[in-house]
Image (cartoon, rainbow, N blue to C red; front, side, top):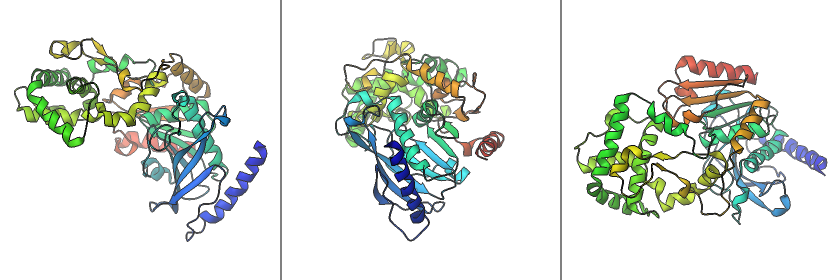
Length: 423
């Protein structure tokens, strides 16, 4: 039956070539398990683009348990051009053009991650939100479209999307020819200690002290700043299930991570004694209160389920600020409370090592891009044990590190390596 389905699928994609070749056509060919929502306006580098829905098994090992529809954006250039498969780690509510597809001149497929955005089963059984099931989603999409596209394949993603690309490559190393992972963590523990140690070394001692002094100042003057938080929450429609006082303290603990992650200017931090409004405005820009709100939690709780089941995350070190914390009494603060309240959420301590072992055994062609000052760089993959991995660290770089903002010398290394592998 599988062989017959593959033959049918191949014939459908041959027909697909006839449609792709006619610019005046607005009809996407019928493909088993793929539904066309609409044709969308494509960037000038493509001839056509579509929003698609791909039927995916909720449990790939037992398809009889039902299916859900996964949102996929397809931008077509030509059959023999490379295919850039974007493995999003979260939702993908719109079609965007990646720098990588412009560099290689290819087609692009963006896949929204299962359980995020609109790619959610009708019955939300958290047991099937696993790294293996997600990788099998991506494997099935590759199988569907490889029957038509004949060029080389690259999977890629940013942050959790890059981590997703690495896991896909570990479990299905032959699906693609190259992996480009941007600023992707690879945590080895439920709360990786390297993401605490990082803050003892990043930047200069003077910069680290200025950040700490700012945290102390806003905690000491919390009563002055709280009316600004009240007004901000009303404006945004935010509520905080943990209470606004604890949300304030969590935002202060998050501040250093956010500042270094996004490459904000340490010299712009207000000095102690600055007006309360100036302090709050800076804290609000540097540490998103929405992150702890009930409203955004509904969007990010699938991520925290994954983090505290298989992917790992980080804890806050509260010790240097304990004197000024009222709601938080522990030396370290776990983000476990951000995950959905389910009984069976236990971290699989062996999951990261299983993936790492498979990735080393496959030793696939991988380019890793990280930023020197990005906290997630602290848990990025180590090239040791790999012979086909190129790791690029942008000096002073943040989570915004991309190929196009690398120094020319590093950019050339990436471009040359891509050309070498794709040719």
